[in-house]
Amino acid sequence: MHSKKIVIDVSNVSMTYRLYQEKVDSIKEYFVKLVKQELQFKEHNALNNISFQVAQGEIMGVVGLNGAGKSTLLKIVAGILKPSSGSINVNGNMAPLIELGAGFDEHLTGRENIYLNGSLLGHSNKFMRAMEPDIIGFAELGHFIDVPIKNYSSGMKARLGFSIATCTKPNVLIVDEVLSVGDFKFQQKCQARMKELLEGGTTVLFVSHSLGEIEKICDRTIWIDKGQLKMIGETAHVLNKFKDQE
Ligand SMILES: Nc1ncnc2c1ncn2[C@@H]1O[C@H](COP(=O)(O)OP(=O)(O)OP(=O)(O)O)[C@@H](O)[C@H]1O
Image 1 (cartoon, rainbow, N blue to C red):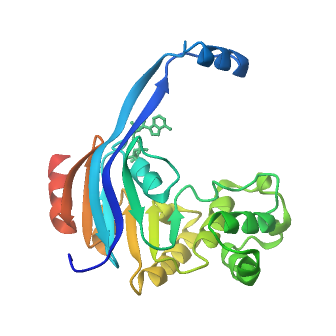
Image 2 (cartoon, rainbow, N blue to C red):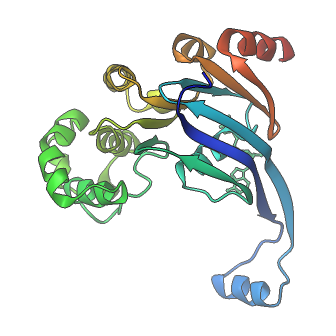
């Protein structure tokens, strides 16, 4: 393990959210209170000094009870959230399969959003033009591809998001419960595509509540408990301890 290249390096990461206590009735009132520093908030420590490394080709699972901090951790690794302290280093091109379609513009059509989302993922227009037929075909949106996204169901949005995020073979995949996207037929397609991506050395960080799924695919697993890294190690061992605690 130690001789392998480190692809994900998380070092002393902490995350504190501010939970505002007061109810403000308008944006104006919010800004007035903000400027006067009258907004009361409580701080919530969602992650506390987390450090771990994932080596090239390793599939790392993340387990923990509701609210433990798993999604926060994934969003930080994916660069969607900035940690309050600590650092993250990711080596390689990453496809975050979390909050699928979060970067979509509701007023643009599915086809236009392919280009928008592609550029957010760092792809050129020319590249996205080449990928467009495959993306549209996989998402199975039919004529809806030229309809503004605001008319899509949440499943349709997620299908397009998944299709765009996986149109290239990334070497780092960040996955949050993505296998529950869409209906069961689409889930099977997602699983097949995930399997393809996993073959051939992709490094993965994978959050799931399905311990069976984690056991099936993860080499090592991290257990997050109330924002703390409770345990990291070989999957079967960590899952046994995790189940014992519940
Ligand atoms: N934007 C936010 N603002 C304030 N608090 C937040 C925010 N996002 C998450 N939290 C809080 O941080 C903690 C960790 O949340 P997170 O979503 O990371 O947990 P999780 O382990 O992914 O949970 P679940 O299994 O339920 O999805 C929770 O207590 C949650 O309420």
